[in-house]
Length: 592
Image 1 (cartoon, rainbow, N blue to C red):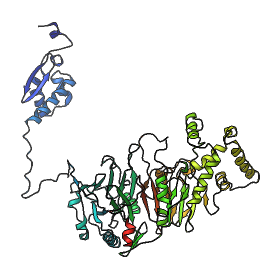
Image 2: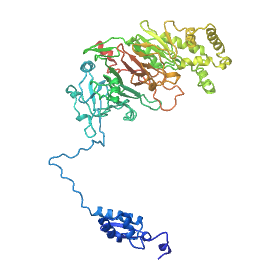
Image 3: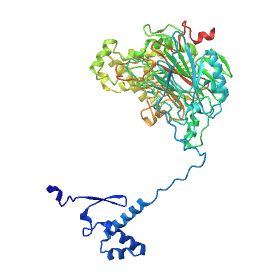
Image 4: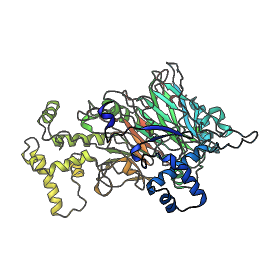
């Protein structure tokens, strides 16, 4: 035996069984070396006779703590000897308890569309056990026939318990919709995934949350009662990809709780028109109905089941201009403006097709030549000098000339002062401008106008507007100062997006808490969230300073007379509609 076996602080242990219970005992804790189980019969007898606790441990000459251990051992022995409790037999025919529905895999279907043909789909959503909004549904049927488009509906369930089957395929829907329901996760094209099995609760504030990566960076469409759109992050040089939710064809049906009441406000009768061109390029935009179920799609109106063409729109908010870096393809397709000749050379444009009553120009001035971000960067200054003039006055004149060029007699052109426009004022406040050999004269001259207005107490003086007017900006081009308002219907179109509440930095998420609906720019990233629409950019997607992954895209906001809006997203070659089998677009189909 080793010395460790007799160590006083490492006593040996003995094991024994007391009526089926295995016990581990340390002899050093026994009373006079006597195991505590030997006192069990005596303690049991005294308890049965009703002796008091004090009488028991005094009669046995044991400590109170030892008696506590004995009583605990008696309780364990009694519990071990109890017969097992038999469960009552199930009643005859009683069903087994339901288990929560679970999934372990998701099946994806490939439509394998043929190339060389335009494919069109109208996709929306429907809630189970809810009546359809018939006027809108009938108009969708009429428009699908007009376009030769297939209709697809994704279902979503609501107010089902944990143990009920939430699968959209087993829910009950209006009989009129049965032939159009599609519950599969379907690859409509190589770059577009229809998530028909998403089954997002209609009360969900952001229906796109968690779905933007479902197609590994490619387009996704989620059926939902709310309308939303997000640009999916991608690497520079890759084509823009979007996540979009549809709107619904069924009437609102929510529980009278806070989440239901909020969702009711954002419930939207809507669908997404998806068009796959002959080369596989995908185009989509929303079809949003008014309270009568009627809707407009660009110049096409669908009213009471009748499709008609050639209609105007209320307004277009163009993607940010940044004239110094204006994309030549976007400029030609949007306004017919040729960047090389700096003149309008075509009327085959979005502007001339839709004939908006108002058009809004954001960040018309790029102010690249003396922007405060790069004014102290010698390499940036060298790059500006290498590609052209350093004259700020010339840059302002070019921006004003562009605004004049895109005017139309039937359209009110509005220049919204934006952060790049306002960089002119910031530059005029910098004393370094007086030492700039290329721009000192213009710096002093425009500052003189500013100081003269201060001396004459001109309250509404705006130095950016002054600079634009001096550069030749036409008087019929309206100018909205930073933070100003310009309403078209019930939509605020006078905010660029850089200014938030109380002078804070603006953002789409902040604007969603703003009272009126807004159409703005600034982020260069198209977005729809609740009543907030954000345009993309009309300038180049790579502007040198925007390194790394990007969400920028060429996109414009179209507003209709009924207040509903749609996002026009353009491809790299300027398309926003399919070119068609023989180059004919949808408007040519209408003419035929």
